[in-house]
Length: 50
Image (tube, rainbow, N blue to C red):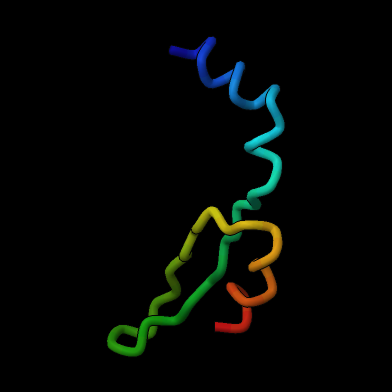
């Protein structure tokens, strides 16, 4: 299974996405939580504007 993952990364299809991590404050408890998402490179700025 690991060989299959490595083979897909070599094709270049995985390079068009970015892992974005954003810290958000909970309105109920006031604690901070991290929101993590895989976002296409074109939508990175939109992810952080939300």
